[in-house]
Image 1 (tube, rainbow, N blue to C red):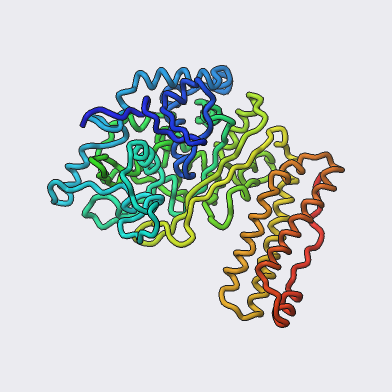
Image 2 (tube, helix red, strand yellow):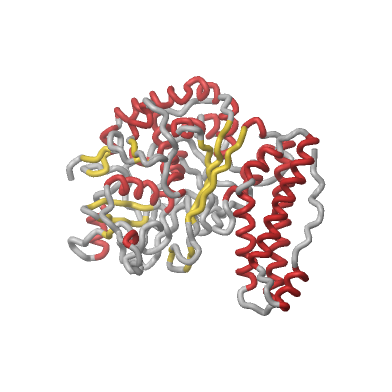
Length: 493
């Protein structure tokens, strides 16, 4: 195939506001470009890819060099790299980007079928594209021709977030392993966003000194698009689970070849899950547990886990990417940052994974003033989140009891819905709560009680909405179970 659609020059990266840009546009830095748009998986995958590009260009030795280079120095080095390696970024051609033309022959030999047709993109291999056997209800559910922009994002996303299953070409009955960044339990990813895209890349750009702190990373390594990838079905991650940083950013969980308007695809390298040793800096975890995507719990509710590094006496979770990026933002006197968290919830069975029922993408952004981030602020925030959780649980309990007494079906489901509605109302005031936790002692006491009253009012409203009180029998049960919220926990100063 002819060498065409070069990712360095073509405008394929989607930004907020509807604009698409090229790699060159981002690092020429002629204008301040907004952050990425798309679903959470696409945003996370593209940020990881952009970090892989800048680390291919250069990795600062330590914090001092990182500060000295700044966003413009990073961009300048990355532009030079892109110009020198431009031939590696053609989506089509003799050496197509992140693809293996030889797998076409391998698949034909494996299936004993000559001139085997490629599969259409969207044949159950990625969650935001429908399966071939999906019922088509709306025009938007039809798969139109996938353009080159979408194909590039498709490949970059699928390398990390491929669904487990038999979507690939093979006569083997074993399903492919799930992409390491998704995992069977659907990991939640978090990253710091700056005001502009170049700030976002810069704040998450690590130094050699940073990377050496993690025993599961064995150096920067070679970018995936510069490697000679071979077909080796027995290839598995080494036993100590060490990986080069470049492969963590862009793993090889699938082997691709874009052909005509479809794709040939095979299972790629096998990676461990979290319990077996997989670690990624955008994940939030401790020695035993990891935060997973939950469609009933928006990521902003995990704020104390994401920021637990603030209080060293609090043995909680750790999100290395957030911790390191916040330290870097402070060193460069950034005032505000955003914590972006997102993921995808899918259902699993012995045959693989698929999106069904209540499965969905989920994401949230939390604006943080860096001057707030102290032990006292964190202790107050932790306390207030515990209070809100207590109110939420009490609401759930009372709604459940109401429906149980009424002998209606699905009391658990209805109680859960009331709780979800409560958290949606709380979310509107969450930024205000963050500010309150930074007030002086006197003002904090007053405002803390005021916002608690607001949250209790939300809970009572939810109870009234979900528990009808029209008949005499309903009124009796409604009065009996209506929650009474006592005083909050003792506020620390």
